[in-house]
Amino acid sequence: MKKPICVLFVIIFLVVFIGKSAYAAEDEQVISTVDEAPVEMQSEAYILIEASSGKVLFQKNAEVAMPCANVIKTYFILMFLQAIDEGDVTADDEVTISEHAAGIGGSTVFLEKGETCKVGDLLHAAIINSANDAIVALAEKLYGGEDAFIKVLNDKASELGLTGTHIVNLTGNDVDGQTTTAADMAKISSMLVKYSLFFKSSTTWLDTFTHEDDRITQIVNLNKMIRNYEGCDGIKTGFSSTAGQCLASTAKKGNTRYIYVGLNAPDSTSRYDDAKNAFNYAFANYSLKTIVTENQIIKKNVSVFGGSKDILSIYASKGYSLLLKKDEEANIETNIVIEEKPTAPISKGQVVGHIDITQDGQSIVTIDIVAGEDISVINYSQSLMKILADWLGINTTSS
Image 1 (cartoon, helix red, strand yellow):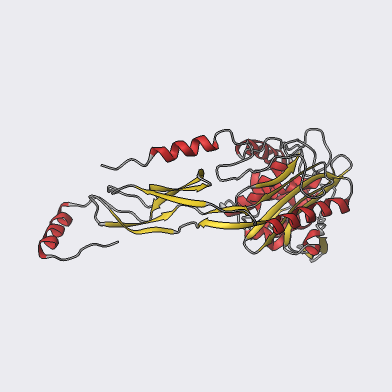
Image 2: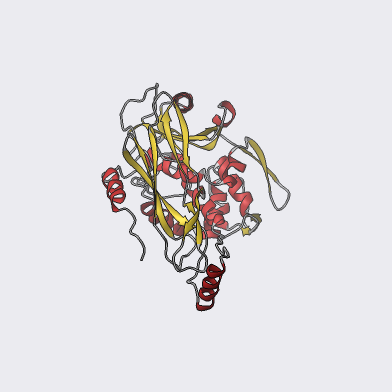
């Protein structure tokens, strides 16, 4: 029989995490909800988080739904990247530009009806200069049309836990009802930065879009942060008379990445100054400590009962890093709980224990420990061979 995993740690985990804010996912660390940042900030709403954990360093009005102009396109780009990652489309797939897509105004790369473009090229234009015609063309290719994509975006917002994000159009133009929150945009951005394909475009300052008929359209990245702040490699700017000056930005130094979102800054200089102040504060005052890495070997020789193999290697199901103030004592402990003797059959990825990570004696997260391979139930002939080997003193232990 399997030994039950220690119930006490599960109870501690639930007690500690119950009541966390709606913004925080299971692994996110929320340490501050103050309305005053430790540095000068001028935006009406803002939030600064560490990307891998979601830890909030400071925020103001971050849950207030507001317009954000072109910054909303960060959400659209995330969905396109997910579609590529999930195999719904490839970057080399071709898109025939519709009359509707070609007729979209605002920021464009001047696509023409009937011309053929690659998905990757359209995505590149959407990331660099928020090209509306490229975004609509991708929506038509992936979702069947602009309205269908808008419905998907709104349905998905609830699934992702976005509390104030509602989409009405794909252009980012001012329209009643199109809103997001700084916290929502930070969450979207934290998912976006997991895609290496995004950074192949977001770090480009100036490029050209080559059309099927060899026309050339110059595309410019309006995000000055990627040129003016060391480590900054995205994400997107936005401006309208209603939304004011908006910015979603990310910067990485060493193994640490931060995300800053500011909405409705009084002017363009202020939105960049806010981001720089936020990043400077974070890099100067915090460091990221890796507690466990994904697929880290926990133990190589766990005994198995009734299996075709006698021992099993087990691994951490995911990684976990903790953002700490540079002058604070870590006081981090890890408690590993493993089933005394897992019983076959065992499937690769099956949970066989957990790691409880505590800080100052309080549980902060639990990581599953999983089997590294399949082990079937020992059959009759294998049982006989094992008995014979034991009688002859032959070691048949294998992993």
